[in-house]
Length: 270
Image (cartoon, rainbow, N blue to C red):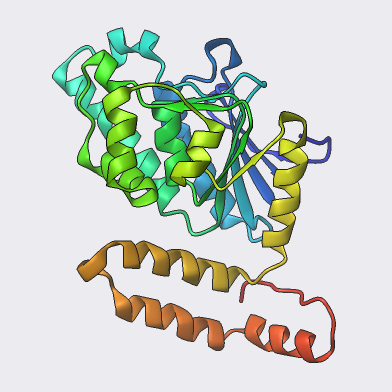
């Protein structure tokens, strides 16, 4: 982070949220446990996303892990004695987790998982809910559910399957092994693989490219892709309304004028 970034106060120290120009940074901040996600961290995610979405200056949201060892190494199992100690506690935990991942997946702004190191279990669940994933060459991916005897719910399986397809989904779960960044790229699990030293500068430049574009167009595209994934249940009328809103926007006028005047457009998201 840089010195003039705006820090958002949170109820837990295990998460950090900062606004740095057009980027909203969500940081999983438990490096002593490889950023394993605890209940308070799941609870903080929707709060952070709400803040980022409410700020028109934020054009892209980046999720990262503190330190250089892990993005997120999974759920913090050391908490399970209390957070999963009864059917009621289990139900509460699952509800909080589902709320967090659903909120991330449905975020109206572009989201990027910047992955350095371990991205395991719950880390995979978080990364898959983002729009894009940029990883270092040394990153490792995996879902160890079969080694723990855990059942994995249909919503989480479906998100992964939408991304990598049925065969790779089965391979990930059946083997429960760790996959390299190169293998993840082959599956389509990650969009880009870069060196460890380059990942932050590469991600910042990627965000700058996205931030230059029209927010309403990106929002319409994101919602349209989400609807089309639903197949026959897709709300095509909603997709059409989002397209109409783009054509009726001031940004569309600005885009046309900038093109004709051979200058860089300045989009405001209206």
